[in-house]
Length: 424
Image 1: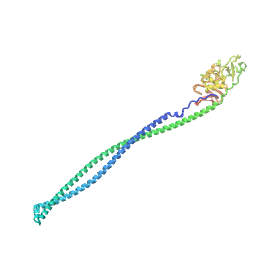
Image 2: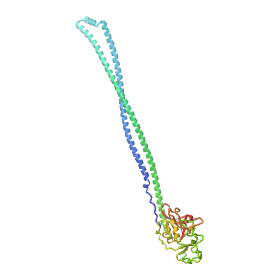
Image 3: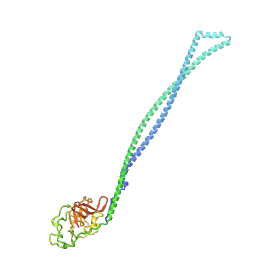
C-alpha cells in the first residue's frame, strides 16, 4: 500500500491577507475623514454660536433703535408744542409791548399812581405791573432753555442712531463673513462625508470579496479533505502482485512456435521514438532453427524474457509514485533502478526486455512520455486488460490528479502509451 503525500492547503486566515490589508486601509481612511469631519463640525458649531451671538446683538440694537425712534417722536412733539406756546406768548408779549408804547408805560405807571386810593395802593399796582412784565420775560427765557434742551436730546438721539446703524452694519458684515466660513466648512463636511461614504462602500466591497474568498477557500479545503479521504480509501486496498502468465523453464522445452517472437510484434522499440521498429537482427532471439539452451532466458506470452536477479522490494523507487506502484505489483519482474517513468522503456530495453507497441494483459508495462499522462517525468502503468477492437486498455496505476497520488484503474487509449510496452 502506497503512502499519499498531499500538498498543504493554505489556512483560510491567510487566504485574504491582501484583502484584510485593503480593508484596514479603508478603515484608516474612514477614521481620518470622520476625525476631520468632527473637527469641521466643531468649527461650524463655533461659527454658528458666534452668528447666534451677533444676531442677538443685532436684535438688541434694533430694539434700542426702535425705542430711540419712539423717544425722538415724543421729543419732536414736545418741541413742537413748546414752540407753539412760545410763539403764542411772544405774540402776547409783543401786544403788551405795543400797548405800552402806544399808551406809554410811564403814563400807565402815572395813571396807576394817580388813580390809586392811597400810596400803598399805588405801590401795589406798580409792583404788580412790574411782576407781570418780569414773569413774562422769565417764562420766555425758560421756554427757550427747554427748547435748547429738547434740541440737544434730539441731536444726541440722532448721534446714537448713527452709532447703532454703524454697529448694525458691522454686525451684518461679521454675520456675512461667518456665514461664508460656515458655507465653506459645510462643503468640507460634505467632502469628508463623501470620502467616508466612498471608503465605506469600498470596505463593503472588500468585505464581500473577503467573504467570497473565505467561502471559496472553505469549499476548496472541503474538496481537498474529501479528495484526501478518497485517496486514503483507495490506498487502503492492498497492492496485489500480478502473476506471470505462461512461463516455460527454458528455451529447450519450448515449442517451435516459441522459438521466435510473433510476427505481429515489434520488440525492442526505441523509447525515444516509440513508433520506430528496431532492426531485423533484434526481432528474433535466435535466427537459427536450433536454439542454444540458456538458463537465463524465459518465455512469457510468446515473448522472450531475460532472467534477472531483481529484488521484490519496491523501496528502490520513491513512494507513492507510479514507478513504486508498478514495482509493488510486478515485483522482481521489473528492474530496481530503471529511473523515472519516461526512462523505463530505454532501461528495460538495455536490460534485454522486449519493448514494442503491442500491449498484453498481465505481462506488459505501458510507458507514457512526459506530459501525456502523469506529469513531466513520464508515467508507467500495469496493463490489466486490452480491447484492441476499441483501441483501449485498462491500466493499474498510481497517479496524482492534483490532490496527491492514489492507486486506481483507468481506461485509456492504447496509443497514449507513446513510449511503448515493456514485456515482463
